[in-house]
Image (cartoon, rainbow, N blue to C red):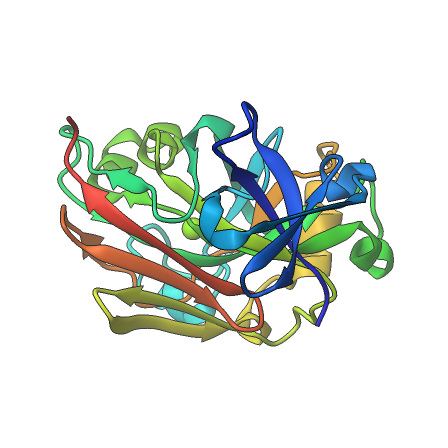
Length: 260
Ligand code: MG
């Protein structure tokens, strides 16, 4: 097992800090983001004293649509698997951390969870060959690609349906050194397993995604690729609890609430 990196707020500090978990209940404080050479200091904090934030502040979140065959079958947005990766973006301002509330917007009728593996990029890259892609993976995290399904259909474009504030829960940490070729990805609604896929079922595996994405854009350190969701999506309603669980990575839990 590699390292688990967190971003957190501590009552005695004004700004968010990065850290690495030294055990299940202790954090070693880092001098900065680990993908920008942040180093471990001598200072440690009990995990229970901090509020975990989303572990990363990306310049962009590139998402992949329809990347699991079973999901394509049940999807209303396509009849067959895409010939090349279908990409879209969520704005960084849609990110929330573990235990934060997903706000169900008034203008949406149906808001779905989408359990996904998130890949965090280690360094600036463009035109990455598939064989080199692993060098640009800093680590893995859990992502919930929350989607206003009715607005996705209504708009045609996905920016609004996928981009509402709070529609991108990420966390609870980033894990390094994990083999991502065949790990489980689960969506668990109110304790019931609704989605259960494996990354080996992806139509376009991670190295292909990195090669494809960097054929048209530059990825920066800390950027996230959200790699698509397995079958079993369904709506969430205010009061629901949604957990995204990725094998060997962690479990990200959020609740759904109405706007204030
Ligand atoms: Mg998705």
